[in-house]
Image (tube, rainbow, N blue to C red):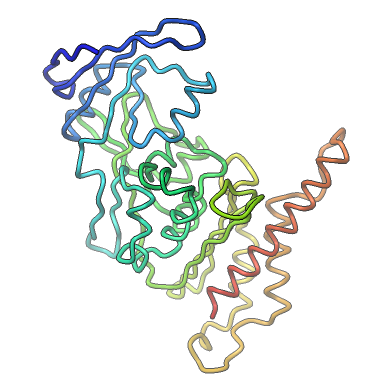
Length: 317
């Protein structure tokens, strides 16, 4: 592979010819050393795809769903691989933060639900290279960090030549305010609530595996609120807003932390699970749905109910 230089496009540019599906494809690979260089490269190369861990990207390429004409490797940009505190009680997470880094004790003490999600994101070889920004940009329905970010109401910083903007992560995922051409996801801002938060998931087998359903739940005692997001059961994480508001009214917030206090009636906790499941996996399916799919939907509904009830119970302990 030849490596000519290209001033302003990341200092290192490679032209590689690969065979994909029997077709010879020329692919340009740029390796910027700074965030500014990455933004410049993206602006100068329409259609280029930024890549960090490439765990989801290579799956799409190998399956023939994606044929990027150019790749912008972000691995040399060290500032995107860390995190920092920001005034106002916010953690600013680099888009290149790996799942393995988020699983370390210092990060887990800061945002435990996100650490739990990162810990279950896959086998070690995936967690070592897979990134938070990649999870968001790929927006896989089974992305483990996504329901946590939705429940925490995290925001993303998007950079382009000469400008940046802040967008709720949930808006990116739903397409309400999507990533625009020439924009690079750089940072994720997460409010630090200093309150219980839980992530639980169900899979079809033991060990690290793709979720069949997941639930992230966050308590916000300052607002006497509960935030919940359900993942893997729809194209994007779902927020059961009515269930959140209802269960917040069932909690004895003043009794939290008291020895032996009953913070919520067990029947209300069970009803919350059913409320969340019914909101996210409707019992009434469209006409023409075969019996097998209806059985699967019922099983997923039961799973979501159990996960939501358990997540609430753990958060209130």
